[in-house]
Length: 194
Figure 1: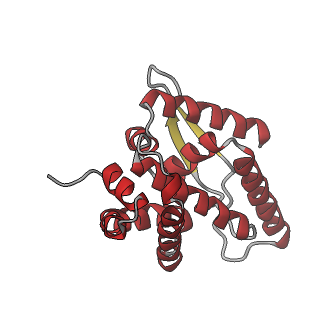
Figure 2 (figure 1 turned 45 degrees about the horizontal axis):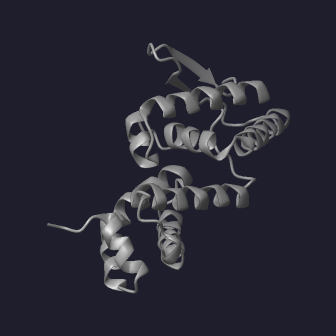
């Protein structure tokens, strides 16, 4: 029987580096795909995946075996993505014509949440429209970054990564109801800010 992720990480924290190599093989592709969902750049995603593993290895002695390894490593990856967004403030996070629908009640009611009005698809964008787009992007980035970590995480995982609530719950080690609640409050907060 294969050792669990948590057993491998515990072995790693006791000095067995081959255990960490096994974890890297298990998570390399999944983490790269996950990160690429945020940064939309294959090379950058690979670099951030390596940085995620490096940070995890450096923190191996502080790992608590009661914590799910998957949630722990994905939290590190998510934080690195946030750092990357902060570095690239001039880059857009979301296009202006993006809309997404989320379930916001326990009954399964859905709400369409449109962050921006759609702009006409012109090959030449007038300077005043371009300025307005930049201002909207900046407001969105600021609004998303001002959310609490738990609310920001579900927004990024659902909207940018396209993950379903059940997947998010599994990654974060919480219930689907908790994810729905966080999404509801995140959207409510964004609407108030925008």
